[in-house]
Image 1 (cartoon, rainbow, N blue to C red):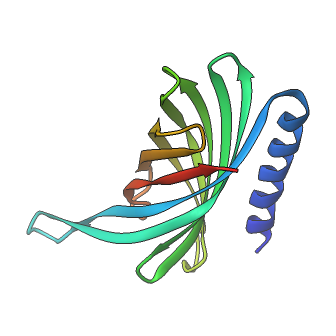
Image 2: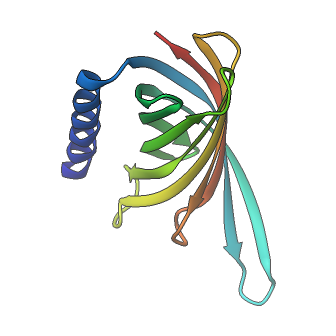
Length: 160
């Protein structure tokens, strides 16, 4: 529980510190999560298992300079029997007015694990803006540890 409070505090500090200096937008997002587990079966080779889940959450978009933005997010992810919080902090670059690329680390807090509840992953994402308020986004997350799987997220975002 202490780690969850730390994550929420970090998200709040980042949101408030950039909000004073830059143009800020807030929004919500949600969609599907495809998680890829690698299971090594003794001498029988690798068996890749894919599990489908969903995610929902909020984001803040801070304009840093011209086409560069900082976009922290806080997402609730449900994946079968596992529920966790995902808090990525993206450096976002506007390639043009409709297409964006996002890259950065994400901190994950797993509610259901007995130990090592905090995991760090790397994210690479793309977003296509249908309108100034609605976007279609996709991100791929890379887990660095055996128990932290890779995932593909597909969803919609709405700027408030």
